[in-house]
Amino acid sequence: MKLIIIGPQGSGKGTQAKLLSEKLNVLHISTGDIFRDNIKKETELGKKAQEYINFGKLVPDELTVKLVESKIKEDICKNGFILDGFPRNLIQAKSLDGFTDIDCVIVIDISDKEAIKRISGRRTCEECGKIFNVNTDNINNKCKFCDGNLIQRDDDVEETVKERLKTYHEITKPVINYYKEQNKTIVVDGERAIEIIFDEIIKKIKK
Ligand code: AMP
Image 1 (spheres, rainbow, N blue to C red):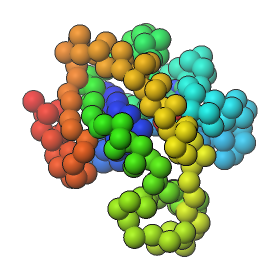
Image 2: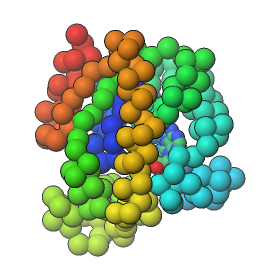
Image 3: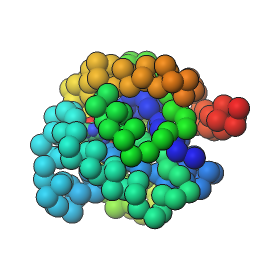
């Protein structure tokens, strides 16, 4: 299966993508995670991407498309993949058509108000990468799994979140329409429990 998951920041698309990749045995490709990993390792790609990410801007298409193309062509993708965070604009969507065919696009819907609340409260463990939320989890500044420090991602502060949402509405939403016109989308309400959303996605994919 070749899947795409699209939703605004805070919609839980990363969580659903991870669950789907395990259930369907496909590779989870998150461009945001790949960029963050490169920033941490201080690679050339990381240095270039950081300038954009910290201001809530999109990383240039040449860099992003090349990255996804090389990932998809790897052997570990032969069972399929779920793209999370890509394509984020029409240029990326049309470039993707040049090297693969997509079966289904999962769209997770949440309001801006909920997205801002969720993301501003998000904390990530510096060590193991687990994600918590001050709105729903009873947390202090240490990870309950590995005792690592919990930090707020540089691009999760409210001003940057607003910029990222603006980009989502103006630039990423046309991508949803692009796939709607091809009858490839399924839409789920993201303001419910993780398991309920997951079950609905699986049911809709099977149809
Ligand atoms: P995410 O974790 O998906 O929210 O991505 C974090 C940041 O990485 C975004 O705000 C962008 O700056 C950058 N990024 C991730 N995916 C893409 C993409 N497909 N195109 C351009 N920039 C991206």
